[in-house]
Length: 228
Image (cartoon, rainbow, N blue to C red; front, side, top):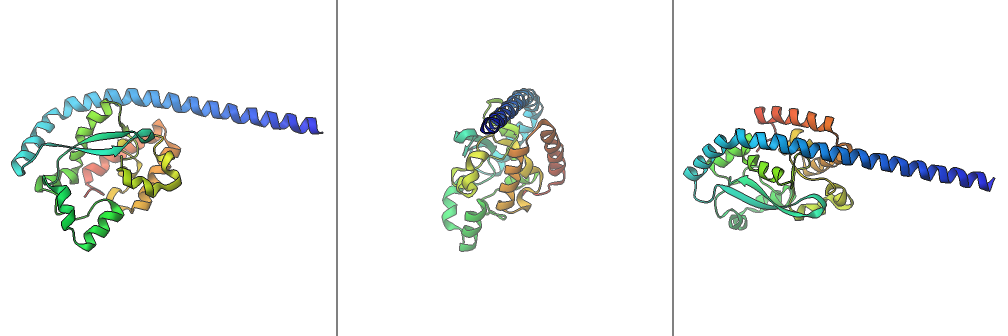
């Protein structure tokens, strides 16, 4: 009887290991195909968006002083620190102005890492944020392999604390230009709901889910839903 039980246990262990190998193979294949898609669509997107880049750059320089692009430090896959590119949407001394926030603004900023009505955002910046055009320069990050078209939105290091025991899971995939959270509510959901959506994507990511997110993102951008 002991021999039979031991044999059954060994068979179960082998079955589990086979399942793990199959799952890893699927993920690896998915990552390879996804990278190819990112390079192809990223290249096409860069070519198409070049005229838009020029127009936005002129508007930003006309509206306020400062550089056209803004680089912000975020945490990428496996905790690697990266600089994401965005069109500048705030005044030049935005970081200093945090000190002048009201107690209510400071509380909102600490809870959500942003403000619904941020006094630092420029006129052109509000339009760029509403249309999500400020995110377009991240195509550069995608072509560099630091980001994907679809994935959890990159966060700053202090936000990782909110993920607790799920921090490593969240960091197991590359961040994206858009993702499950960005396509399903964005600023209309709480930070806790955002984390749940991002982690759902990590657990269920697939080319089919990526396609659905991509299509849904286009609809959200056109309607301006959730963008602030």
